Image (cartoon, rainbow, N blue to C red; front, side, top):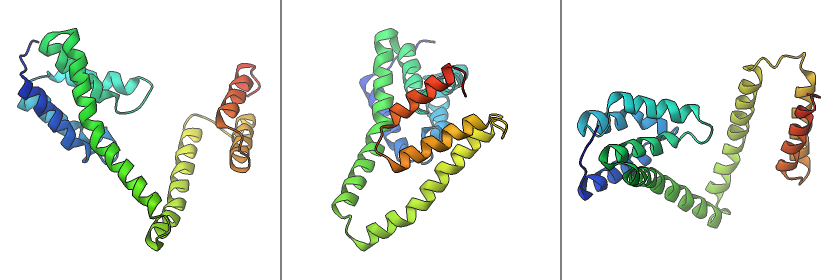
Length: 190
């Protein structure tokens, strides 16, 4: 597939991703239907198979969930002129999706830090702490029990509990514990 894109088209693509950034509550993947509407149906810059393959490949690769945005931009760029333009497409889509959300997060965190002594900010942080901890514990539980980690695999559970306690009670860097876990697993002890 070969398409022609002007500077105005690249700017429109950038602006579309800029607007999707603040709508992507729950991750960028939640805006995939609108991306499909825009890239496949409205502009015709991608085909249905290219769109689906971009998401499938990016989701199967290790790394952040947002990689599919880069791959969509890459494919738009490939369709618009080959390898050099593929990098332009990737840069346009990733920059567009990242700028608003990271800026908002930075400004909110900075404001929260400056106003950390306000009663409302303290209450918000104290109220969010149990929710965040519960979400982390539930995610860990789902990951642990969904992979056939039964009670008979007690060494794995023991390593996880000891690691959690060490992280909680000491200032030992987490990377040392990850390395120790890798050594235990490599030697077949867990």
